[in-house]
Length: 206
Image 1 (cartoon, rainbow, N blue to C red):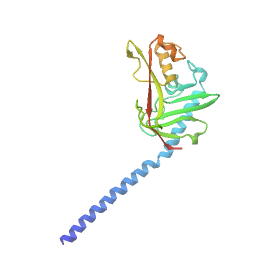
Image 2: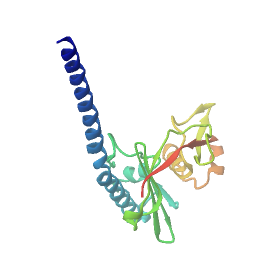
Image 3: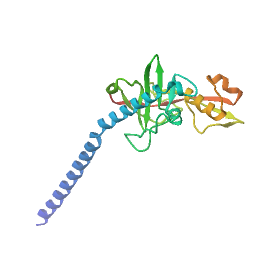
């Protein structure tokens, strides 16, 4: 009787453990099965962003080849873009559209996911990456690299964050009511500081 009871006890524990494993696998499948649709939603959001920029090129205060989501929202050409792969909205200071000879190349960062300088007319061809946090240290040769800027006024940084070149120019012009078109001209207003940042970048779809 003791052996029988002991066997039944272990048998129940085994079944219980198997149920937990199958539930975990099932939840993981359900979670991942929605990813293709979410990736496509992100691609469509990127395309809509590029269309909003291209349709209003002459209306931007200062014309550069690149226009960031921050500037596009400020000009009310588009609203915040919801992050389809997580909570909150897409990053207004990393998302941008570059227009070169009539072609539009869109970058959209939403949470940990990134569409990086893709032709917006090839919707299904847009690659989506998962990226890490920016760091001043390079971890490997495949790291994504970017130069970002801030400005010091009376030895204090003007902005809480560092920005890429054209977004930095936009914020400087907005703050000081100016129309700088080149970073080298800003030193008369404040001292420009720059640094190079790195992050990991791994292809997840496309």
